[in-house]
Image (tube, rainbow, N blue to C red; front, side, top):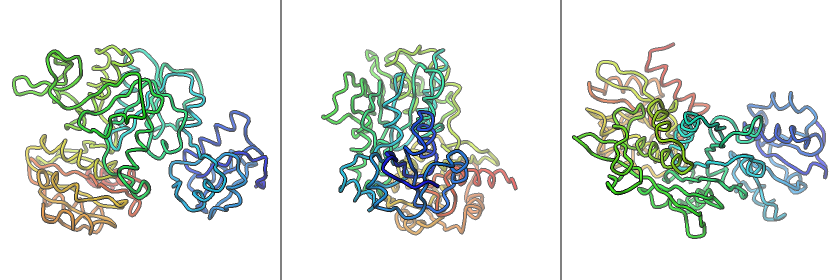
Length: 456
């Protein structure tokens, strides 16, 4: 590999999907060879072979970060998986005054179409995907990605779309400054990633960055932390929420008629919620958020409802696996934080004839599991606990429901089969990250689904 020198103005930190997309972006713009280098603290990152094949002449540094290397760079492009508080990075920023940027910042500088920017602790992937479907159903074009699916910079290739629809994480927002979204939304905020953000206040402030320079802000009436802070002054502020909508209102909300709940717009009932494939109150809110965003860019209501009625949700997000002997099994492995599991319990609980058998546990990331107590007490008959932080979950929940310890996920599924009765639901919703037992939440969810289906 070539050596780093003053002509390597750009230093990409982190060889994951994002870091690789940044390298490809620079390559497409003739900014490579001596113009950038890449480093990763791991000796064998997963995409190492791919990077070496595509960029054999680009300097690559593996292992502990070298302070001298960082201080020589004129630009730091930091992947979202890299903590800006990592000592070498933090010291470099303090010493040089350099402002780290990320892939969303690079994207924002070059985007050629209006951006719909979506964040939130939970459901941002669901709403991003659903809203992309609504745009396509309206005979317009959308390129969808960011923190879900394709990396943002990959969306810049090819024909210009009608809209870019981006899921953006808090880590990506930390290194974004130029984003000027046509519409920006924070769907919800609950404690997450406090191992990096340290406090809920810091986390909220970071999420709020999505509203910088946006034209229209869309916030959740049921979560005051999602309302734009005073320093942000969007031209228009819209909202959605699970309130019963007033007949003279033009807002989206809920209506109750003949003991049925409907999604509604003012006095117009749109669709009964039991006709949606995506179940639970949290998904009603997701649908209302997407409809509110769509109306703001004048998508036809009929097209949006068509897409909504066909939308079956995301894999690993309250995904129906099977029903057997009166017991329904759901895979919510993407619930890697407490707020996501609360949403799943509060959404599925009222829709379940019996009770929920919850499988939870993994890496808690400093989460406060006491926040689960009310939802667990209300909806859960048994909590089966797995993973590194199972003892912390047990301490938080043992006074509110029966708890059982499982050796691994296979043992947990076996215990759940014994605990569940006809009318109950078994829900894998870990409230934790997966890396203590699995490569990622996708692998955890796939293993769970295979175990439930009895597949080898």
